[in-house]
Image 1: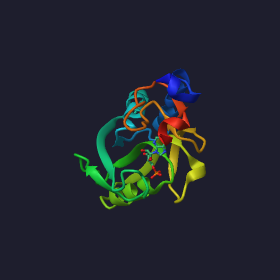
Image 2: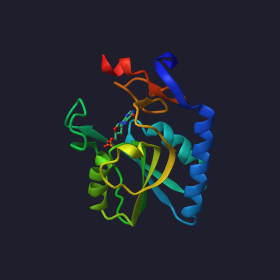
Image 3: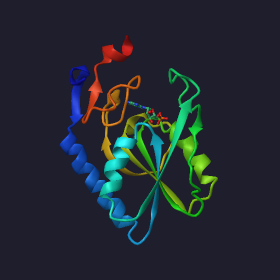
Length: 179
Ligand code: IMP
């Protein structure tokens, strides 16, 4: 699969090191508290497992998945919750764990739904941030890496459900998603 990458942006070693740094920041900021890690399936799972194991504070985990109404992502932000959380987040300190924030429209919807459940606090921790593409303001508190405005895959991020299992993050060759 590596041969489908135009360029490797972050190696596995760089990623694991950076996740440890972010976990240390989270553990320091939430010292003495418990957190609820709400992870958006499926892409953020790889990030979550490394992040969660590196935390030194108690953490609960739960998962949800979002389905786009437009399969071709032609209408970004038009989404619904396909699988909801199992746990109640009322009164908890929630950290929403995402794989990538692009336009921010998906997260804006998700944050508005979750804030209606009255967590004590809620912030966003994303593996990748494509900040130059942002259309709406999203309070991203923690990010591992900023990425350029290119289609990236690996370490959980997919194209057509493939490439998630790559241990690095890279730019996908454009002829693959243009064909
Ligand atoms: P947003 O609503 O535009 O922020 O879209 C966020 C979602 O789009 C992410 O959770 C990913 O599923 C997907 N996405 C955006 N950019 C990329 C990319 O470069 N590679 C893989 N998925 C992406």
